[in-house]
Length: 130
Length: 139
Image (cartoon, rainbow over all chains, first blue to last red; front, side, top):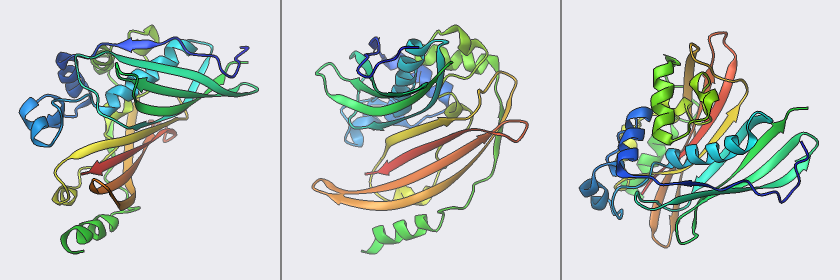
């Protein structure tokens, strides 16, 4: 395995669109209007429709599982949504290994808007295969 | 203290009480629609659930109509996913959710209501396969 603290995960850059938000709303079954109805979203004080938090969580899950491949198992992850993200802007998922104990590793993961603001922050735990 | 504190009290009365179990079968077509929607084409997800798929089988958070008396809209504050066993196509998953905490925070920009949900997902053998947490915020 040879994971080292400080190792960075390859960036995963997503390009969410309003179409993707509608597609995700259907696939997850979350039909809260802030994700597809611009007038509704503005009416509750948002800049327009925003990404589902759980869609950003899915992106960050993919960041970890793409990097991990078949080398181990994702055993847990958690994320806090610190800011809203809108379709039409790239969403950059990043991560790095924060600690390694035997086959157990903890990662810091986060998602950034194009200005570099960390709008989602979190951690993940992986168990590497022996 | 009034209207908003009584909403908090009424919501706190739900803490710890499990909601009705929700069962669903993991279908290949649903997995495909989900992975297409998130844009994750990793081949293993043709037959196994990717990390956040369980929220599409049964939501982490229950609908609590009285919470909507507070503020003007919902925000998702965060999610936690803990995995004990893989979930595969054909599995029948049963989800049981509950409210684990309700509290109000007042900051410079006003008051927020936090509702913490926890949902446990079991497979057809009755084994716990995952435990999810969600923080729903009314603002």
